[in-house]
Image (cartoon, rainbow, N blue to C red):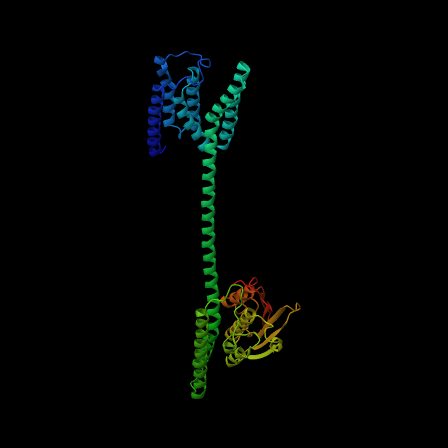
Length: 412
């Protein structure tokens, strides 16, 4: 048991004992009248009441360690005090013992205490009414017994209820804090994933072009015209990469939009904002990388606003990554890009199909890595899906994206 509580209870017991002895010294004994006591005590013999008082005060020291046991000891002492005619002094420690037992004991013990206290209130009332037929005395006895046995229980129940409410409130606040922390951590993870996808999509295609052109120039005998063309393409890719990075950084610095609003490009941003309905920059880049590209983009004919900004960006990045993978894994391949409305008119279907080198097969399809993962995540983030399938001579990426998205469907 905590020594601090033990010392505190010992002080309480000592103070209660002193107060009880003072009450006995003042003659506040025989509260039930001589007819209720089995022993007739004179004023000089009233110090016999100090015995049950002392026993109760000793039990008071250990009330936290064994609340039920000390309550039983206090009840026996109170019964002995009643046989002597009853004194107010012994009520004091018994009140504390009953309060403590009701406060810290189990619900089963508390229910038992209520039942027993009800019986201890009713029994004397029945006895007095049967013995004296005095209704006023019966009511007085009932009030006294109720004050003795029920008041500590009511008080303990009230304190316990407030304590439990405080504990529930603290637990709820802790749960809200943990939920808020988890939400912030999830938001950070989602933001990191989004930044990783954007960084990969923005930089990877240009770096792949730089690697392809520089590698091609190094793999063939020196030729001034060819080498200068390769260097020009490398420089162009590097500048485009820098421009895309500038656009991405500017976007990150842009103030947040209002909750529920969708960020859309302004007319001034139209050239820099990647759009599924405007794939010509990607086609030009892919052709410069040596691919033979054909495009069927039916969405380009749709009215402005028919495709949400989120779908425009996701579709553009998916096509960009698919063309980059084709340039890396199937140099000089023939690639077809088809963007049409899906069987569900609310969705768009994007198909990128490229031929494979003769050495490639279905056992080792190109593009399995961060690029394919990024494409799938982009599609899933706006409520779409993406598949990639390899055959003996072709690699096909198919994405189905919603034409219009809402904040509820977008998962960054």
